[in-house]
Length: 302
Image (cartoon, rainbow, N blue to C red; front, side, top):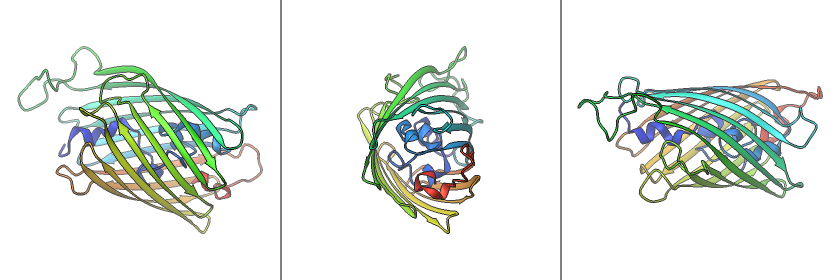
């Protein structure tokens, strides 16, 4: 691959089209399936039963990612919302050949009308080739010949507060067992978002406490427009302090009452090892009530 391992692995985060299109800034407004990967508390803030399949590709990182998830906040009779999902990813098959499997299960619950909390259990298994570099085996950078590079259970915890009808503030911590490895870094993120029926904007900050010799941050901003009750247009910007990379992004989606197809592209700018990531997400909306509710009924369902 022509990019760096840090940029190719990207904290091990599963990509989705909406999140990538908005620069990753969805810790406050990101309900539905994206909440499973970012802030689980947001699952409790919309009445949905969504199933999503995603695929992502990066030519510079030689990366491919495939995933499937389901989020439900309407089928159960309690106030709990739940979600399950998993992704499989690969980078640089002709070099370090790192692959990882990421499985998650999450629960969320509203506390009154203005606060929701949630938690996600995560199983992560990472494998990497041995002796594939130009100088042969290396104790510093090789994989492990007799087992995975990482095989761990960890968890995320999040909370989201609604400040009126449009403002939301989300706070989440990832990998809180502190695995002590950049393959599952302990991070904390804060997001502030404003969303209406027709548009949404959000700004997020993230601190990575594991990957580098000191805590390094990310700044993410994004916005989206919902046009003619069917079309979503998104744009975002992310600055990663660890890799010192600026990454603009664009996204588009067609949202039908029963399904959606969404795409997004992010490209590193002002980078010595620039990479591009393209994502395709397909979602199915199950209307369990039979009432004919559509994604256009609330901006949270974009």
